[in-house]
Image 1 (cartoon, helix red, strand yellow):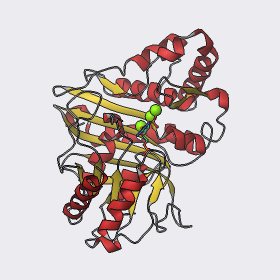
Image 2 (cartoon, helix red, strand yellow; image 1 turned 30 degrees about the vertical axis):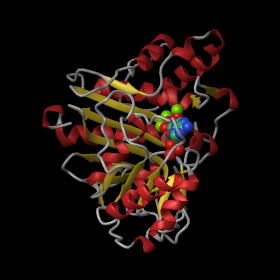
Image 3 (cartoon, helix red, strand yellow; image 1 turned 180 degrees about the horizontal axis):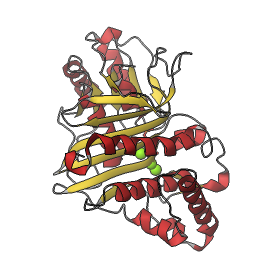
Length: 349
Ligand SMILES: Nc1ncnc2c1ncn2[C@@H]1O[C@H](COP(=O)(O)O)[C@@H](O)[C@H]1OP(=O)(O)O
Ligand SMILES: [Mg+2]
Ligand SMILES: [Mg+2]
Ligand SMILES: [Mg+2]
């Protein structure tokens, strides 16, 4: 977004609306009250909840309302297919009432959505993205398994412009903005619930979801891997490979395992030094799982590369075209981590 789109005033307003919607989750109205009947299993056997669908509907609605002059193209994770089935009518009704309650609890918009409006809003996220034009990239709930467990999750929005990510926002309702305990906990002074955002060339910032002055964040400057700690996925990490990489580097601290792009946010604010992402063989990473997180890390002074040391390429559609694995860390550690990654991969084969 630039001056044409309304400038800082509009950005502030959008952050405020978003925060209120995310705070709804923080307050536990959805996350803590989630029932088995609010969860579906998708064709790939991953879970999706009323909150994933509701978040996607609300975010596309806010973007369309606030930026009416933009041509709207969105690459988003969810679609309406499963909700159009006969046995999904109850869950569709629940999503529709959650979305309408959220809008009614806030004075930003005066409107009410029908079930058809909800289905149509979800299908607005079917864009293929690609190398030309502007596309929003949305993961409405990233880390759904963490969300269901009551752990970390993120609401992740990026903007792709001519194939490059130029803006990223990560709402992390369960992440403290400054963690003094490096092992995934929070100290008594930490404020839980943070909104991270970055625009290309302008740095990365964090503000409390409840509202606070945005603060600049920077990645940690550790340059000796012995002093580094690393993040990995709780659910989807090849732990034998990441522990071999850590051992080669001489990393002493145990891994910090966390769901979702909250790992990118924690890294960007200096809570740890390295994020290693190695998923199971054959898994193709999706653009919405990395767009917002990667720009927040690079704008905080870090680097995000694939296992061969190349930048991530977001211009190829809904999937990331990449060599195996993703590494995020600071510029001092990146060459050492890439070397350890190559050695560990070679040994594995
Ligand atoms: N088999 C898999 N391997 C790697 N990532 C996966 C796999 N299945 C789902 N994901 C997606 O990886 C992301 C979770 O990352 P993490 O493991 O770091 O928490 C999520 O986007 C999750 O989808 P979803 O957005 O539906 O939660
Ligand atoms: Mg999912
Ligand atoms: Mg995701
Ligand atoms: Mg998701």
